[in-house]
Image (cartoon, rainbow, N blue to C red):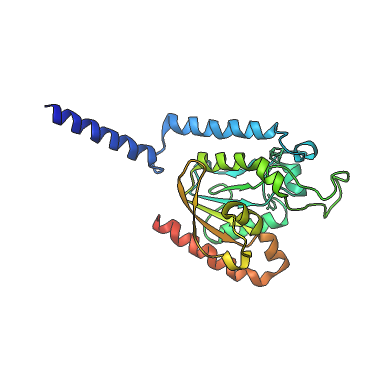
Length: 233
Ligand code: SF4
Ligand code: URA
């Protein structure tokens, strides 16, 4: 009798773990709680002043997409248009990213898109309306902002991460190789809470605008991602 009870307890615990880790089920309260937490994190970011970018931003750019997405794309940082709209990848590079997603049956609503920093880095913050004033984030800015990205990744819990360009690839993998060497090769990424996620670096869409020859390589990477998504492994 005692053994049967113990067995039942073990089975119940196993079942609970399986249900909790299943992302096929729409999980009533749990889902709401999780989304709310992402919402709370967004509010925190919107009032953040942890680095100087907080003083000059117009809108913080938290992220966009499905809070339970299987795949998360990570870009560099908001540019001129993103700063004004409060949404990532809405400028020219963003329109190309939309097309890339569409080519493998995804969209900005079905995936999740975020950046390594949430506020607009400018070459000259004294001329915020100037064009060509975007710059990549510096290390101190990325370090200050990193906890938000880490929390975002753990809340969304994607199966796959795609890093767009060298800045986000370096931020995630701490590697020194050029993006042209590491793109297309799956890596294992350990999240802040210790989950393992498959991570695929590829070129940033802005690089494709400068050099259209790179498109075929990104296309290969996206087909690779698509096949992983289909297999669910
Ligand atoms: Fe805060 Fe990140 Fe914005 Fe810096 S870039 S102010 S750390 S949200
Ligand atoms: N480039 C990025 O890396 N992120 C954006 O949100 C827009 C352009």
